[in-house]
Image (tube, rainbow, N blue to C red):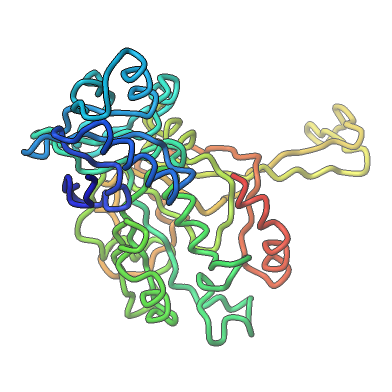
Length: 366
């Protein structure tokens, strides 16, 4: 019969323990496991991962595979090896590659295992929940005092103010997790203990969180100098108080395609002048534009940058990200913008916080 220890997953795959069986299991045992998954987790893909005694993944099995085998004449006491799929899809753990998940979805793959060099499963990706697997580490700037939101922030740090049923920063983290981001560094200062206590190490979310404590305000870039190592070559830097439906995969792919050193998400801001506007040339009117509309692009507080640029940040000194970007432009680095027309809100003022409460359904539907 099925036992919870039929196979032992590695690293952070515990959530999918039920999906593991051994090669010496029978079809009947596999059906019992599939039925258990269906009862306990109705939304979970009904795919079993079959491992040999050395924990190597040797095949996958779905309820459809079993039905076809039984129709062909097999019985419930036959081994799962008789009907498992040995030509299965997987990805390798190779330290920071981007994977296009759409090609796997087109093949009907719903559970995608990551294997190490010994063909052992180190992680399971549920493609029904995951949008992408982005090879970036995220740094969240969460050290500000939220002065404009007082008195809400008198006793609660702004990142922990709730929008709907969870804090602003948790909305950010959960969305990034849906793009496969697993490693987070959080810069904290004001009421830092509350933030660290709420999120902890990230184990509850199967992610890794480390905290950078500022002993003095370091601006929006200075805290990066306190991080001694990163697990990816590209770093995503974001304010903790931004709520958005940004497609982080498109943002990342544009950054790589253009071989940029820094990319900044920009929000188009349109200004319509209600009057005719003169176009001037040497003090003379060269043309008249009737009620023109101008589009400007403002900083959304979300950045991608190459890891090596962080070496240019003075250690433990105050530095705003805008100043850092200007310095990189002066050094000839390629700095681009990524215009975004979807939902974006910087929760900086009380009216922004009220608007965020009204937009919660938009946020949770993406």
